[in-house]
Length: 520
Image (cartoon, rainbow, N blue to C red; front, side, top):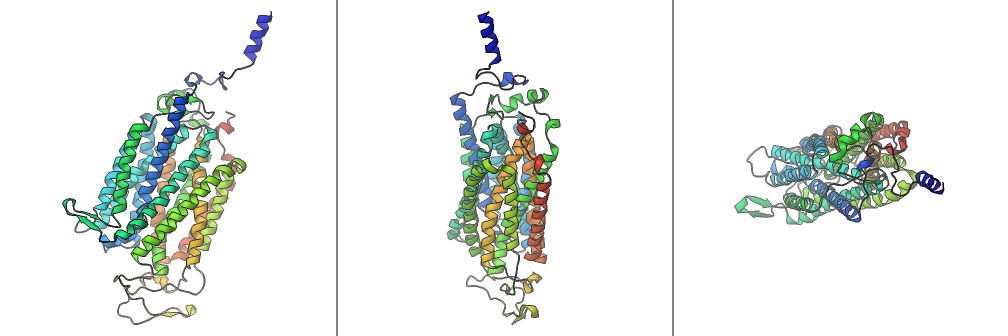
């Protein structure tokens, strides 16, 4: 009798090894995580941090010098074509991300990672050689940036790996760390570019390889070297790991994905597709507005402050690096604040801060930018509209023989007030707070909405959404800015961000974690 009673009590009181969800059809896939597996799992996650960092460096290391480099290698290129060159990166990433995401769901992740990074290395080398052809150099630059973007499609693999290798409690911190590494890449990328500005436009020539190492090509070559280092580290350190939302160790996500789906653990019918769509739309807008900002920063500063190509590359490199430093502090703050406010509140607050930043960028007053001489060589003076009460003599070339100022072929230069440097720097600070907060919360929340389902394809679509934004954003702003000016460009952005914030409020209650929604 006593034995039977003891047995009954033992059956009623589960011990630490009893599965939390005993009716889970994949409980037999759950095994205790050993200290060695834990250590290997986090080293692999750190390799993903590094991959994200190097991907970010590969993008940002040339972003401030693309415009002057494009002007140097092909004099027929204008600001409109610059938009296509910047967008080519994102277009390539948009097309490649779902493919790499699908690949990572069915094969070891080393395969898509090594393939994508190899494409990136080859594309950076091509970028360093775009000066060689005798004509149509701008199209070679376009091609090089497109292939760099294809290589960057591995971001979907990185995000899906981190999402699958962390529990729901670990995920916000891990995603914030990954975003911090991405921000660090944005810091060091423009910083490297600013430091390499001292090499000069002429630089040195390696005749045996027909290679010019100057302030424009050196960053791309450094990106290629870092890519090779990344491939070596992935081969040596990266291993497949997967845990569920409660942190229980599972077999490789690639091995059990079909069994998990057939068992009904997380089919598409259980996923809130409205929440998934909302997350993709918000992520698109966040990436769109930042793509607009980073694309227009160099042309805007050259037009408004009469900076030369070298000055714009150097100063904007410092500004973007400073934004990156600021972003790291934002990510650290997000990890703390999200525990009290939740992910959605931070996302909404970030959108509001971005809105304030672009509103401040709107031109006001009656001070106009300095005009460029190049389009009015036969004129001795130029009258602005009477309401401006300003008469300026067109700006002559600087001591480098380069014409600086706002070109008259952009007709808005004659009647649109200047964006003061204080406005520009204040907007930089605000966007540097709002963008990283929205960025990390967007895909952290997205990964929680998806739950334990293999996320490679879904992360591929999210990355494609962001890449689509980076494709459309530069083309949009280059066309609107060139033809209508900064007032129209930034006003449209303000309306878009405000509408997105309203949309987030309308769908606020649906953006919750899968495990919370279904009581898991």
